[in-house]
Length: 219
Figure 1 (tube, rainbow, N blue to C red):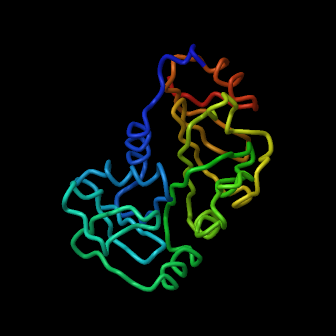
Figure 2: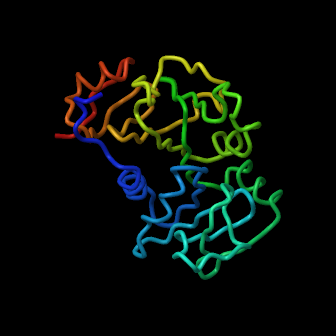
């Protein structure tokens, strides 16, 4: 897609997501790219980060050489713990997720359908992860589900689709999609584009995506 001269980097995507998480929110960051959001939560906001392996109150990634081998997130990445942070059994952690105690989760995805269905755990590849893990619990237990992903696959196909072709993590669970090209809300009236980050105009973005979308960009 050589015509796409402008797109967000993954850190810029993470920074954009962090801007939309409000003060005092309890948030789970899924494995992979969403973990970068932790590095862009400024000291001006108190946001409590949760990990399903039993950590509450995580901070940004540690500086090189400051890693604590006993302090990791669910993706086995080193993290820091802010003052007041806590460890607990993973069964209690899943109870938080399933009980509706998380305000937001940020998940990666292989596909999101126009109805907000989420497929983020299996593509059928032989080396795919063996199970859905905590993603299903997060997708259905969090009050708001944000997805953070590239707009296109490496083959240039849209990850936003009419119907997911991969096994579903959750049905009609996604509230907002952040990609390297745009930010899109999933609403009862369909997909609504709120921001565009590339040099494409709205009509060209819709054509590239391949599913109907409404223009909700504030002028």
